Amino acid sequence: MNLSEFIRLALAEDIGDGDHTSLSTIPADAQKRARLLVKEAGILAGVEVALAIFQEVDPAFQVDVLMRDGDPIKPGDIVLTVAGNARNILTAERLVLNCMQRMSGIATQTRQMVQVLEGTRCKLLDTRKTTPNFRICEKMAVKIGGGVNHRFGLYDMILIKDNHVDYAGSLTKAVEQAVTYLAETGRSLPIEVEVRNRAEVDEALAVGHLTRMLLDNFAPADLRDMVRLINGRVITEASGGINMDNLRAYAETGVDYISSGALTHHVKSLDLSLKAY
Image 1 (cartoon, rainbow, N blue to C red):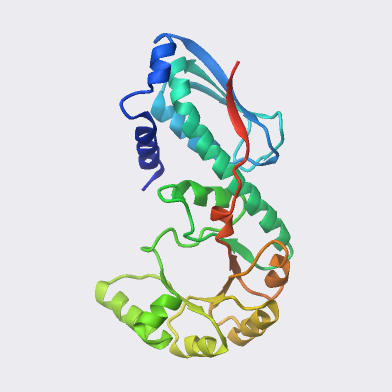
Image 2: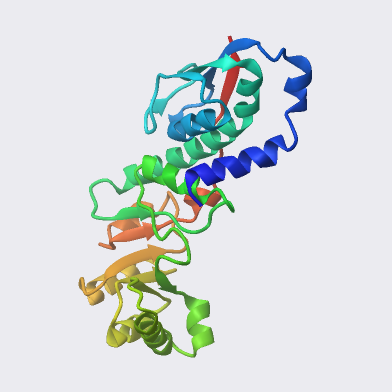
């Protein structure tokens, strides 16, 4: 799904056979304006999405952008103003706010975590733990906040996790079958495998063919030992039990990436509003 497809589907979900409140209360030719107000401090995200929504709803809108994606925001700031057909402004309002509030919450959380990592080599990754059909915006918000997008879906990487290993019979079998599959289908995809202990790290290094190793639920001291053992032979990623309190300790192990599902599924939306003036 691209951004245009997402916007069309979201508008169809919301409008149905018509915005009957606006149709019944606002004259068809009424021309009005509104401004998008900030009510909570954080990092702004979703301006480009909002512009695309306004364009889809009414190409005649006049939108004046005063702040950009990635800008720090505080209560009282005005992000943008929009002028045009009043009914259409009201029709676009909720989708604009839903996207921007959620995206700004994600960008704010991401920026806070990225700042904790400053001075280390470690980068922050998102995951597939996203809202169905809203992944495109949530991953956009992670990038705005300074994070790095992991795979977008099941189709752009082979990521062999614990259930794959258990179903395949062993880590070695899972990796070997993935390599065979790629050869047979003519695909070129990176292969990452999740490891849960030292034995699986050794097995993963022995089987080879890996681009990245996901070290799951290791304590920082143990993770440091595994990073030293791997010694740059594959890219390293850590996940599981990592939060703001221990994030720095994990980053200082020398791991290349830390992935956090909390970036997209444990985030509070930022308070924004679209007000007539």
